[in-house]
Amino acid sequence: MQIWRSLDEVPADQPASVVAIGVFDGVHHGHRALIGKAVAYARRVGAPAVVVTFDPHPDEVVRPGTHPGLLSTLEHRCALLAEIGVDAVCVVPFTRELASLSPEDFVQHVLVERLHARCVAVGENFRFGHRAQGDTETLAELGRQYGFETDAEPLLVGEGGVWSSTYIRGLIRAGDVANAAYSLGRPHRLEGVVVHGDKRGRDLGYPTANLQTTPHSAIPADGVYAGWFLLDPYGEPRRFAAAVSIGTNPTFDGVERRVEAYVLDVDGFDVYGRSVALDLVERIRGQLRFESVDDLVQRMGEDVRAVRQVLGASDRG
View 1 (cartoon, one colour):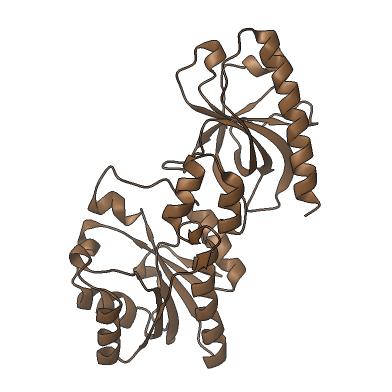
View 2 (cartoon, rainbow, N blue to C red; view 1 turned 45 degrees about the horizontal axis):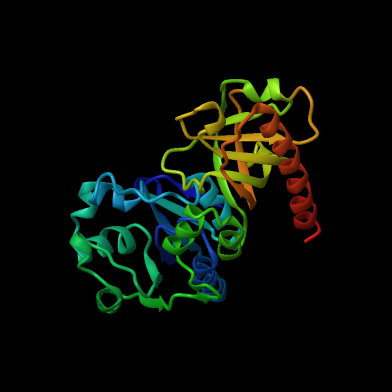
């Protein structure tokens, strides 16, 4: 799959394309349904399937400081899109200049001149152009004018309601990573670099990797989670079972919120400075304050046993 980091990287001889447009944060079931239909149509007509996505999230430019918690990094988003069969991803830098384009200017500049769109697929709630003036009817009208079809897909509904990034973020904020995984079609992933912490876990017999998460990550509610620790997640990943702690370590009067992973059954695990990922499977418990270190260590042992049980069941499918 090709990845173009701007419209300028789109080849000058790009053939007529089937295009799906959206932020597609998380590439959840709803996104997959829309993009999957676009890919299937592209295969039928012998055209490349191209996804147009945006970075940073448009909210951060239109309403600075309101950036939602992200369900996927850009790298993860692209990897998930490749799994669906997308031929190319065009990452359009979302700027004030782009936000100021009229709906027609956006269509002409992005879809017609650069991607030569023959069909454009969007969700039924798609808005575009300056002050979100354009909607799916606007897109369809412009499509008739510029010679492309428009496919406005209804939002997909699951057991918990409409599958949307907003809904999934709510689950994650509540710590319900199991239901978030159901809606995403995969475990919610946190990514970042392992940095030095207090090294307190080592003294307690549970050394942890302290993760400096990527900016704007959707971090779940405080507590202990069962998850998978991945080294080199986008190369040749190595996966390890892990107990993940999210919170402020109230037993030690901590104030800084941290994400820490105790990797099970691995000795001498030096991953400082490495980029890693955590796939969160299930919440074991909420954050607790213990009266003594001994009480904490005892509960950590219970947590690890619970993590083994959860991940053992998860691995068996």
